[in-house]
Structure formats: C-alpha cells, structure tokens
Image (cartoon, rainbow, N blue to C red; front, side, top):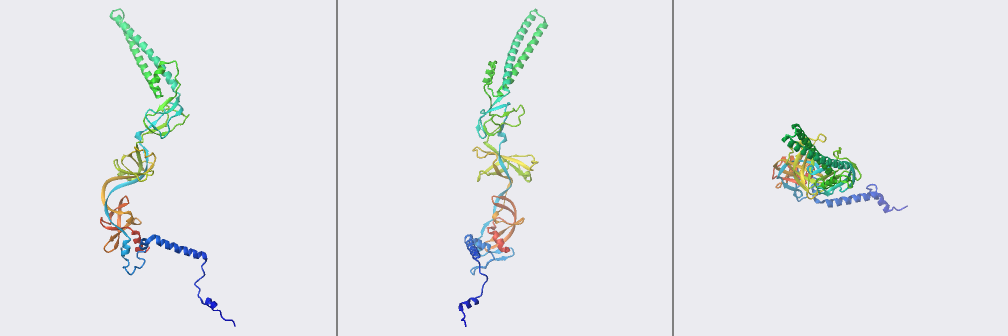
Length: 435
C-alpha cells in the first residue's frame, strides 16, 4: 500500500486565491504602484490634505474638519495649508480691450507720383532706405522731354518777337504823338499808334507767361534752372543727353517702391492712379484699432490707452486717443480709433500687431478680489470668507464688475478688510460637496 506524500497533501489542502497573474500583468501592477508612490512624493502634503478635506479621518491629535450648512470648519493643519488675504480697496476704471496694429501716420506720409510718362532707366533707392528732401529716387527717359524743350525754344523766340514788336510800337506811338502835337499828323494816326502799342504790350505779356509755363514744365521734368538756361542759349542743340531725375519731395524712410527697372510708367497728369514711391517719417506712428460697437458710446478723444506689442514683450506703451471715428464701419461694425506714439528709436514697425486697453470714464474705488479666489458656478461666482479665530470658512456669493491686473471688482458680497481664501478655494468646494 502506498504511503501518502505529505507535500502533495499540503498542496491539495492549500486554498487557492485565484488564477495566477501573468508576468505582464504583474509588471503593470508594479508600475502603477510605483507611479502612485512617486505622485504622492512630488505633489506633497499640501495637495494631499486639500484634496482630501473632509474625506479622511483626522488624527487623534486634532479635531476633524466639519461641514455645517454653508460653513466649513478646517482643522489646524488644513488651515495652515490655505492662503488667506484681506480684501483691499482698489481704484477701478471702465476699460475696453481690442486688438490693433502699428500704422503709418497719415500726416507724415507722402505718396510720390511720377511727374511724367516714360521708361524707368535707374532705381536709386529701395524700400527701407532713409532719404532726404531732394535726394534722387529714380531716373526716367521721359517722352515729354523733347517736346518740352521744343516748347521752351519756341517760347523764347516768341518772346523775342514780342519784345521787338513792343519796341517798334512804342517808337511809332511816340513819333505820332509828336507829329500830332506839332499839327503835322492827323489825330486818327496817333490813336492807331496807341492801339498798336497796347496790342504789342499784350503780346509781350502773353509771351512771358508762355515762357514761364514751359520753364516750369521743364523743372517738373527734372531740369534745373541752369539746364533751362543752357537750352535757351543753344536752341539749335537737342539736349537729350541725360535722363530726367525724380527726387524725394520730403525726407524720411522709403516705405514702398512700386516700380521696377525698365518699367513704362505714366505721369499723374496722364491719369496714374498709384504712386511709384511712398515716403514716410517714422519718428511718430499710429496705433490703430477697431473698437467693439457696444463700446462706441463711451470712447472719446483724450481717453488713456495702454498698448502692448507682440514683437516687444514686456513693454507697455501709454498714450491718449487722438482720433475716434464719427461713424461705425459698415463692413465690420467696429469703431475705428487711433492714437499717436513717439517712435524716435524706430522700434515700432508698421503692421506690428498690438493689443489695446482703452481706459474711459472716471476712476472709483471698490473692494477687489484676486481672480484666484473666485470659484465659478455657471454665471455666478463665490468666495470663501475666513474667520481666523474659529477656522470657519463661509461661502459667500459675490457680484463682479471691472477687472484690472488680475484683480476683480466686487460690487456686492464682500467688504474691504474681510479675509478670503485666495489659494485652495476650489479644494474646499470639493471637500464640501464630496466631489
């Protein structure tokens, strides 16, 4: 008869706790356990206690936290973990926020049109260059130049003829007057001489005006007074040895260049609709914005503007509204506004994006609550008012108003001097509700 094997009996007698876990499951469980341990280590006791307010039994050394209606009574340890500050009175002012951009000052920008039509032969500046008044921008082979030179030569000849006729008429009038005085000529002869003199004087005036006009035309075409004198002195020579030069009418920065080398352009007189250059003084720029339609009744010239530029973080530019449009833009239903900024250092570039905060109306003081103290429920908000003596935390509904630098105006619900929880309020909510 076989003897029973004790080890086998022991194996059969031992109760099983369930199916054996696979190695992968074991590793997964082990990993989760390690993660939980590390999370508890790094989060720290503050979150552990705050997240568990009212959910874990207190130690035998202190009274447990309690909930009484809308009041939460914290333990000493829980109280130490809260950040509590008094409500302060702060100055608030109505403000309106919008987005905008840096723009050229329209009063300091000049569009440059070509004074004549022709073929662009040289480009002497490019966008971004700084120019002074009178600096050459480009040269052009003007088709009107030859005609203008012919016109000035003809005008000079006409003026010479008019001068000669005037001299002759003056002499004849004097002679007829002397003869009539000596009774050597008829009255009608003297009167005719007077008419001829008046006609000659009119011709002289017309010739002078015509010459001045064609001289001005040559100046527009880039010719100097010395060039014009040379043309008039040598009428038999066609002066086409140099192209016409278009110069800068003002000093500033070349903002745009709209022509290319070899391009045929037309003059402003011939109907050109677009300038060939834009020159602006960038020492002062505009901050341009489009305010919301509902803010239009409150905005007016002189309102303070605080602006920040995306490209220049950390800098705040303060100015005053210098322009408020008289009407709403029908396409955007926004109100165009702008202000002026000094840009002597050239840091602000046209088309940079900017954020506007426009302060409007009078300044008034009111209780201020840090945004971190507010707990929102739908459209309402509340704070936790603290009693340092009893460690009681009372929920208090508040009505909110204006905002400024992370502080919110409390129009109702709390008074200046009352202490509120500014960090940890959300955890108290969860402890009270059991979420």
